[in-house]
Each structure stands twice: as structure tokens, then as C-alpha cells.
Image (cartoon, rainbow, N blue to C red; front, side, top):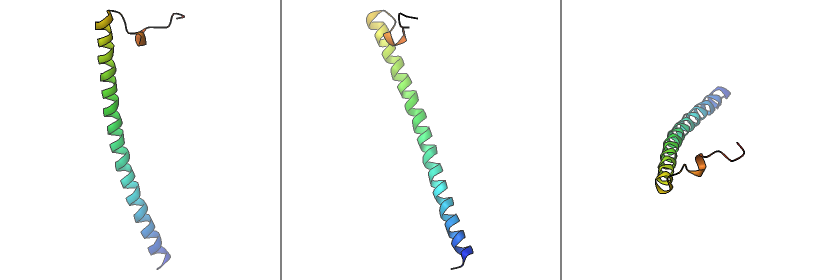
Length: 67
């Protein structure tokens, strides 16, 4: 095999790997965004539930006494 053919094969392989990794990263980005939205929604629900149960602002949303 010539050096040019070997280089072309390696380059083709690396391009395929780069494309595969790009797809994985894009899927992970979408999944992280979806999970972030769900966590925010759950935190909001829990804060509302705490307000409804106690009638006060949830501790997580209160500033510490030294502020």
C-alpha cells in the first residue's frame, strides 16, 4: 500500500469517527437540555407545594439571616 492510500484510509476513518462523535454530542446536548427543563419544572412544583403547605416562602428561596 502506498503512503497516500494509507493516509486516505486513516483520514476517512477519522472523519467517520468525528461524525459519529458529533452525533453523540448533539444527542447528549438535547438530552441535557430536556433534563434541565424537567428539573427546573420539578423544583418549581416543589416550591409551590411548600408554599401551599406552609404559607411561607420555601427556605431554599430565602436569603440567609446575615444578608
